[in-house]
Every structure is written in C-alpha cells, then in structure tokens.
Image 1: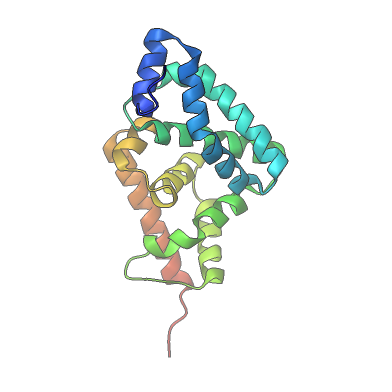
Image 2: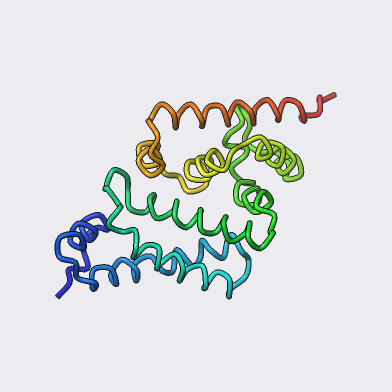
Amino acid sequence: MLNRNLSDEEIVVLLRTDGNSRYFTLIAERHEKAILKKCFSYTKDEDAAEDLCQEILIKLFLKIKDFKGDSKFSTWLFSIVHNTCIDYLRKNKKNVQKVISDKMKEEVAELIDGVDEIPEELSEKILFELLDTMTPEEKLLLLMKYKEKHHVKDIQAAMNLSESAVKMRLKRARDKINLLYKTYKKPSL
C-alpha cells in the first residue's frame, strides 16, 4: 500500500531506491492536472495541451532519477514543462514572445519600483521590448520568480545557477523594466 501523504521529494527517493513504478504513478496523478493546465496556458489548444502533457509525463518518467532534491520538485518540474512548451511553440512557429508576454502582463507592475498598476497597453509594450533583449534563460527566470512565485533557492537549484547569479539576473531584468517604464511613461501635466 502506497503512502499518499509522502512529499514529492520523498517519493522520488523511494523511486530511486525501490524502483517501484507505482511511485511514479503517484507523482504523475498528483501533477497531471497542473501540467495540463500549464500546457494549455501556453498553447490555448486543448489537444496540443494534452499531447504536451503526455510528452512531459514521459520526460518526467525518463528524467526523474536526475532530480537531485536541491530544489522543490515542483520547481524542477516547472522548468521541464516550460521548456517543453516553448520548444513546441517554436516548432509550430507560434509567437513565443507573445505567449510569455501574455503570461507576465499582470506581473509587470510588481517589477516596477513605486508603481501599483500600469495600463495594459503600456505593460505589453514594455514586456515586448524587454523580452526582445532577454535570453530564454532570463525569460524562464522571470516566469519562475514573478509568475510562478518560486523561491530564489529553488530557481538556483533547478537551473544550476549560483544564488548570486539568479539574484543578479533578476535585478538586471527589473532594472531593464524600470528603464523601459521611464522611457514610455508619458509626463503628467
């Protein structure tokens, strides 16, 4: 009988030591709906989201023993989901920048110093220009920190970066957004 109260991290340890595929089934059942929802948020297509979800579960099955436990399992899994969805969008010539921009729109105000809310049109304009200057890794960092609300330590472990590298890249992104906001902000009369 499987203990359903085990954490994801404990299940991975049991999978490594025991090799019992029922533990993987438990992890898959626990995360399948969230993976599907996340895939749909990227694709806006139910069939594509379901296909991607299955692809991610297969990747998860093949890679789960690579999970070191340095970060939360959910953070590690999110990076797999994100990268798989971005690869899908690229292969299907979808506008990756538009998808990421749509996901980050609400968080832009959070990144700008001293601002509670900015107009959606301005938010989109700032994000598009910002994303144009960023690497895929920097985009993933922003999504993980501000959209998904992962802790720096978890991001660090999931992306194999030092804590200072994560903090510096997040700071640079914030600085870019603040500069763009000041550039686009219309002077009030």
